[in-house]
Length: 240
Ligand code: DX5
Ligand code: ZN
Image (cartoon, rainbow, N blue to C red):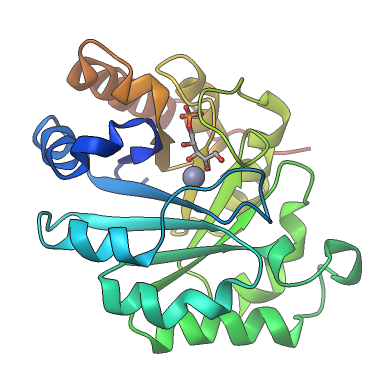
């Protein structure tokens, strides 16, 4: 079992002091920084774009885990690569309507987007909304086109929402077939819900409000590491 990566979402940080917040949270034990990019179209909220990533890059050497909740994500691949993004995770639903996808055949538009991300020098991630089945990613994972899958455990758009326990089962489906894959959970992750995420096989935890909103973020991250370590000692759960 690979080690846990904790990726605090800066969506819950104080945007007026973002560079300091990033520095602080990394010093307190964060492994990555999760950067939520929203365009007011794919999701009903507007956040930050490549210029902010570029500015932050001057203040931080951290791994920038960028989650693009935008329509037409390909439009931003070059800008994010230039800005210093490390992981570029786009939504499957932003490329093709999931109704048009199958679990046995790769769709050329998804293949192309993933290849463009890597060609630009970033790692390629694909995110799934809570209702999108994990099986739709099998053709791309089998071809080795993806570095990470992001499983949304809330509807994308806002921090501070309630964890959707059913969605986390997608991690188990993926983990069974891909022992080395980075599987990230995002939305409503706390020291408590991290237990179910870890047991399902997730190994990258995003948390915004639970970490930035805590009086002692280091303690919360420590509890998440304990939850992950405890899950590693359990026999692997076999999905039905
Ligand atoms: C939701 C975002 C999340 C969000 C998580 O659209 O993708 O990354 O910041 O926030 P919490 O951890 O507060 O649910
Ligand atoms: Zn996110």
